[in-house]
Image (cartoon, rainbow, N blue to C red; front, top):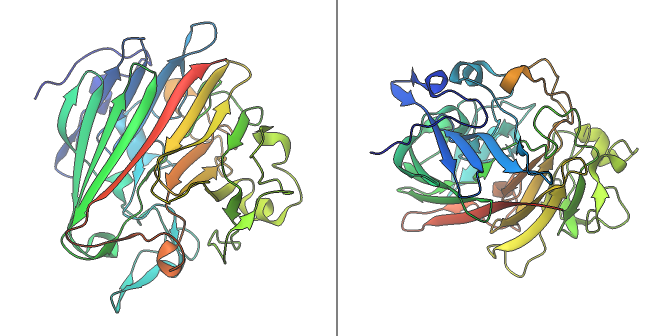
Amino acid sequence: MFIPKRESKSGLLQEAFAKNVDGKQTGLYVLTNSNGCELAITNYGAKIIALIVPDRSENFVDVVTGHDSIDDYLTSEEPYFGAVCGRTANRIAKGKFTLDGKEYTLAINNGPNNLHGGIKGFNAVVWDVLDIENSRIRLHYLSPDGEEGFPGNLSVTVTYTLTDENAVEIDYRAETDQATILNLTNHSYFNLSGAGDPTIGDHLLRLMADTYLPTDETAIPYGKPEPVRGTPMDFTEVHTIGERINDDFQQLVFGNGYDHNFILNKQHPDDYVYAGMLQSPKTGIVMEMYTSQPGVQMYTGNWMTGNLVGKKGQRYPARSAVCFETQHYPDSIHHPEYPSIILRPGDIFESKTTYKFLVK
């Protein structure tokens, strides 16, 4: 297989990502486009490590948080930086679910619940590199029957593409040999002023979501969607992220900020739609979001401590980056009224998410 070996604008070194982990080799893979943008990936967790795009002054800016080496990822207090999360992104209440009359027990790794697939989810395994080109990489992981308590041998492929329109396309595909549940997302943390900038509070945000899912204090949805109108959850018109984040609003108190699933306005849950936009007033960088997933979890990095050392010695304090995790709704397996996350033999799961970058 041809693997491009090139220096990254981020300063990342390929030798810092070369390691044997669980008997498989990890590496650094740098995608480029004709405009000088870069997308750096490691096959450990199928993680986005760096994403470099131009600002309004035509300077190149790295807009995602991350680490300089595979060793730092292996020991990080934030295991989800840039990762593909699965089998089930977000939370499953009490770490239990019943499928076709059989109960399955999962790890409890976030309060009383299962989070992002368990102790060793897709973020913490080494993916196989199927093929790579200058602007595209395809990764595969076979999750064996019983891994982290989930049924079925699940074959998952994730393809990252960096287009000449300065867009990052993420395509997911999965098949199983036994009924199982599946909810995949990417957990990149964005700061469009540049990773290491201390806040995303000044970022302008619009989300095409008239409703959201309120949760209990453990981040499990407790019922049906509620309107965002008249609440700090309303981003149907542009607001800064920090404008209302400290309001005395129960949902924000529970999450210490935003950590909620916004239900995207669409005719059908699988429609590929414009989901919203994020903009930094400092750099002029705008990120447009498109997805075929029914929801997006907005997480404002509320529990980041600033103790962790990231790329170039940067520290990431609370609310210094924001995630837009396109996905199905949290705890969907316990809510038959939500779009289904059940995958059966013979069916193919496919979804697409795009983050497109421009300047204003």
